[in-house]
Length: 372
Image (cartoon, rainbow, N blue to C red; front, side, top):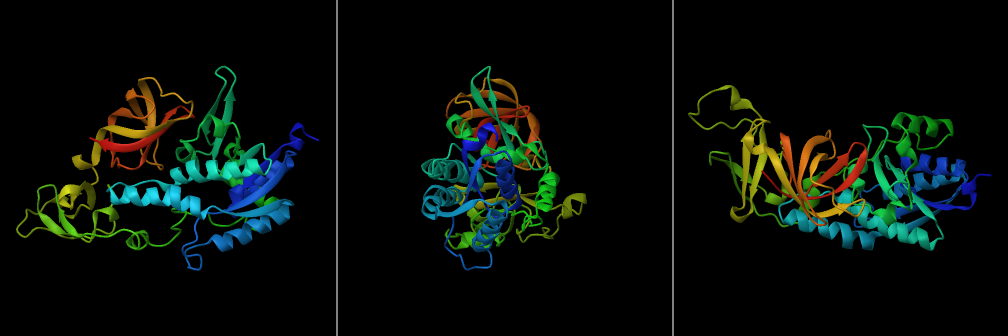
């Protein structure tokens, strides 16, 4: 029997394949594994878009195959209070928040962690593609990227602190997704081929604008191009994000008498929101100067080590699906930082997270407030 045999680990079972394989691997390693299904949203449980009932059935079936107990825990009140309310506040302020970052910080690694400790757990585990490493030289726990570069989720976990990381395991962070699916098939997990969930946890697959319409008042206003020409009306600034191309309703618009040129049919992108004038600015062409930024400022910083990084060369992501970009930390303290990018970054969006890396090590990050 392994040395870990007496350690209790509580696994967040979502109904998906990653958390299922996480629970299986830990049981194989000799841990006393307990599964918890987190219910974080209940406003429209019976709708076609909310899959929490289906997910719980899948999670329970997985627990049955693996041979572990599963408990259903409702965190909907905490979620609404700590994540959803903040999400709406940010949208109403014209920014584009990332609720998955907030959900990890406030629910999965706070409310869930606290609950697991009450159950006598020594550790918690989730199916995230990331890794935790203890560095004996510094005595600190480091958050590392997952080994599968196409699945790495450290970006969403950058707000985790030393206390949280010291109690967290990410078994599938050591694997590639293809391997996770293979293990699930080999052991006969019922969800081995289940499609990965996409989109924001409480919105699911539903149309995003339709969902926001329920909660945010919309004030239509003018939609202008970079020369001040009116191209139409927007439905409300909250419903657009920088770099957005779909849903603008101005596909083939050309000003009468405008010079016909190569740029006439270039796609339109959201480039600026002028809140005080309730005006949406759009530009033509992916590489329009208004869409490119060399600098950003961020606030509400959170550093994995507990300390801000030194100024100087670094790497950063300003959105999840992008390669690390070389940058310089111009200044950084416990709450704010400024970055300079030698190569301009596209559609750097207030409300999104800027996350810093030193190689595979995630240093932390903050909420983008301004870019230019």
